Length: 178
Image (cartoon, rainbow, N blue to C red; front, side, top):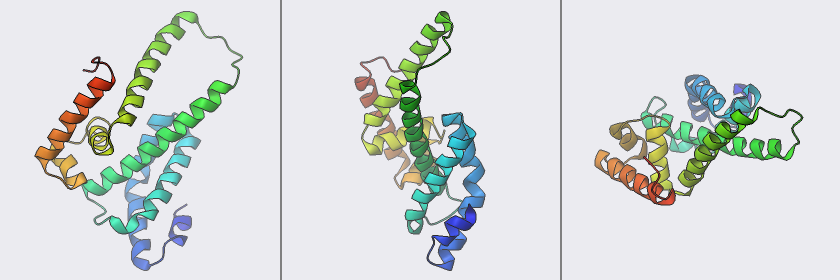
């Protein structure tokens, strides 16, 4: 796949940058995509799509090893994988299931899925600047300083955005968010 991506670049500098990004982040991206999708082939597809998106903005990435670059790549990947997950879920739910699961597990699993899906839908409704901070904190597990570096803002601005994201999310969830 690396050869394919390199063929899409225009300059030697871009080729070198893309090759370094690929070697540095591919395994991390694949692991994260698999955590979201729970399917190896779909995870590979998500990584491929994410690299194509990163390639479009390659000139905006400065340092390969920076937290900002890592955060950007992971946000692109996670959004790509979550979109794929939603599409796959819609496709799978449209098919009739031949196996009827145990009803006691169905109720518990459904409640957990509905809660997680409701939260994910509400997070998606947050304004982008709050959503990005929220994802970087709770999905990528970055601290305030790392978030600030990734987004090019101060640590206090990152904390304030996170606070506002939580408040907006609490409102969207009807006060049930902890």
